[in-house]
Structures are given as C-alpha cells and as structure tokens.
Length: 237
Image (cartoon, rainbow, N blue to C red; front, side, top):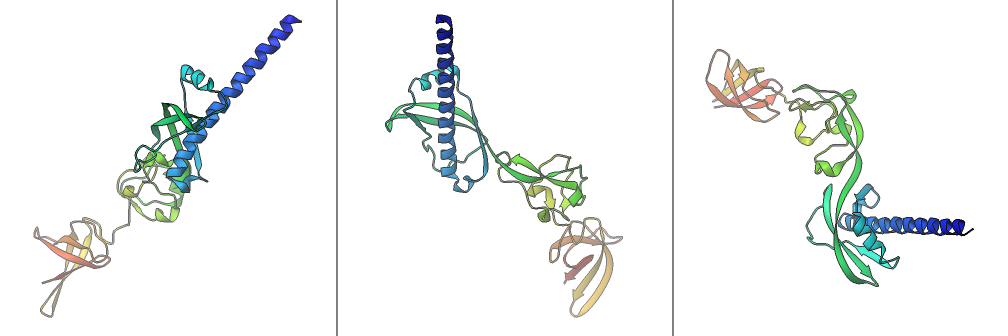
C-alpha cells in the first residue's frame, strides 16, 4: 500500500511538473507572439510560428517562480524588424515588477503561399502557368522579395536560369521586350522632312519609347534611336 501511495505521489509530482513546464512554455510563447504582433498588427490573423528552447537549468529556475510569474518582451529598438532568427530579451515579472531579464534565442516563421518554379526554366524563357505553383513558405526568409499572384508572372520572361523549386522574386522577371538585342529592325531616319529607311540590328533590349543603340546592317557605326513600334526604331536628326 505504501509503495502504491509513493508511486502515486511521484506520478502526481511528475504530472504537475509537466503542466508547469507546459504553462511556462505557453506563457513565453504568448509574450513573444504579442511582441511580434504589436510591431506588425496585420500579422495578428496570419499563420505565425514561434519556436524557442530554454536550457534545462533556466527552465527549472523559471518554473520556481510558480504560476504568478508573467513574461514580457520589451522594445529595444523601435525601428527594428522581425527576422527569422532573433535573440529576444524577456522580462520575468511578479505582480508587475521585473525580477530579472533573460535572453531567448527564437526562430520565427510567417507562412504564406508564394510562387515557386515547378520546373527549371532557361534564361530568356517565358513563365507559363504549368511552370509555376504556390507553396507555403516562410516569407521572412525572403525579405518581402517574393510574388504570390500568378498574373504578375505568367507571360513574363526570365532574366536568368531558374531552377525547379526556386522562389520567384521580382528581380528574376521582366516584361518581354518589344525589341531584343541582336534582333533585325527597321530603322527610320527623319531629317528636314526627309524619310530614309534601312535595315539594322538592335544592340540592346528595349520597349516602346525606349532609346536604344542600333546600327545599320553592314556597318559598325552605332547610333541612338527610339522604339516607335515592335521591330521599328526611329532616329531624328
């Protein structure tokens, strides 16, 4: 009977300690979440993850405060941004009075469906719907340099090679130019009411109304002209 009672007491103590540890973890996580959302109110309803780990000694010490302890992450730098990996100061409070301050290494995730390459796309290739898919990723790792709307990407051209699984960023895409480098173009020279047309070669990419370098065929002389239409460059003398 005594052995049974002793075993029951040990079981109760073990469960109580487990609940205390769980309550401690929840309180600290809540304090960190409150800090993050206070800095970024729009994240309140977002898919946010907070991971941290206390060493056993620190955890036992904090548990010793009992259930009356509360926690708060103070603002150190008003303009500081939330990043995926942070070391945050954590105030330990009793009856609103700070008893001590510790630092907690924290991993933070803000998850959103963003565009990634479903398959590899060559340099100069065109993004199509079947080459893209939405994946749930931690956008804090991409520093707001990501895209989540298909229509912003489909039909655009790659600036370089894009491997499968790569997060699509703004600097990877560009509008397909009206004229591409080394493309044959019609050059129209206007001067004092005269109009002279000739075949030429574009020496750089450009879009409507851009001024680009061109040269006439069979000539090395370069001249600047304005793109007036697809495949057409106008030079005003």
